Length: 229
Image 1: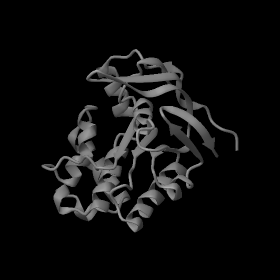
Image 2 (image 1 turned 135 degrees about the vertical axis):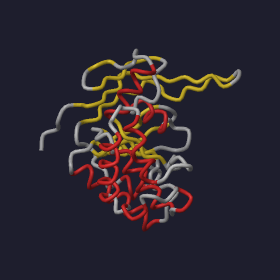
Image 3 (image 1 turned 90 degrees about the vertical axis):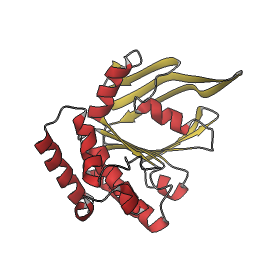
Image 4 (image 1 turned 60 degrees about the vertical axis):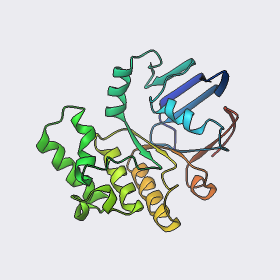
């Protein structure tokens, strides 16, 4: 099947951090395309630039040098508020630490991203209820994160990531804090989302999970060293 167009493209992207007197080159001239409906895994040793590269793909950070294109539009020069709007509408995030707000119930956590997009309350609640059913968590809607298992929290986090119907879901070690059985279930759900048309970019240290992606990108010392597909 022919590939669709690139939804995200990094062109010669460098990222430099200043840590005290030390300069850290997190990324060194990465060029990469992520295509519509693709499932990509990003792998590499600790400090290889995996999370930094995903931050770039997800518009969470801007490059020190180079360009990032979203649907052909250069977003590298946008303001933080403009980037935040793009993230909110077009990209969903799933993290290893879940990043749920402890004082909010499951349904309130799922509804939250819609608040920043100005969605009316009734529509927010209806959408959140539907997504909780999708991840089989509707019976836990009023529980707070501390009352949920790790797997349940991650399912809530996936529902939250999907709430604004993003084209791209970025998952940074989404199974890292889960047992193998629960991790496999989360992975199966990400695969299902991909089959339904979502573009998935996943950072993982787990070779078995990476093999389930269509393409694997290996990073080392801030550079892409190989692709497998």
